[in-house]
Image (tube, rainbow, N blue to C red; front, side):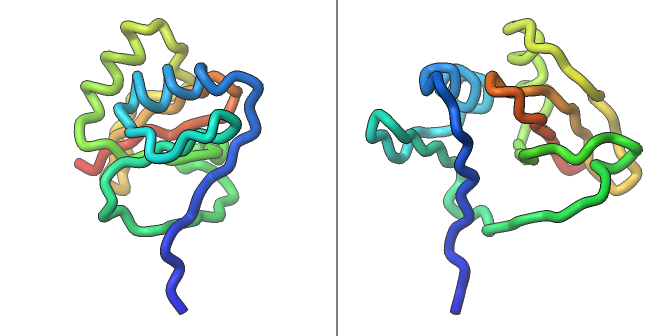
Length: 116
């Protein structure tokens, strides 16, 4: 048996706010839209993963989502341009990532990261 996909399902009251953040800021593609559920995806070669943690590293809280990007600085500039509050970072971590935390429009703590 092989796990083929892991999907985070997040209850929201405003689907368009998801589009502005996950498509507008992160550049993810809409791969399914039934009106009541919209699914975003990126590179199809990503491996399904789920993490369990007692902290987020460097004394930070555990994020609800971690999203790895290929150009952290580009995403950070979009965040700054849209005046989205950054809660942590950008920080270069001792385990080889550079990252920052922010909250999506629904209050979920999101860890945006890139490997260095």
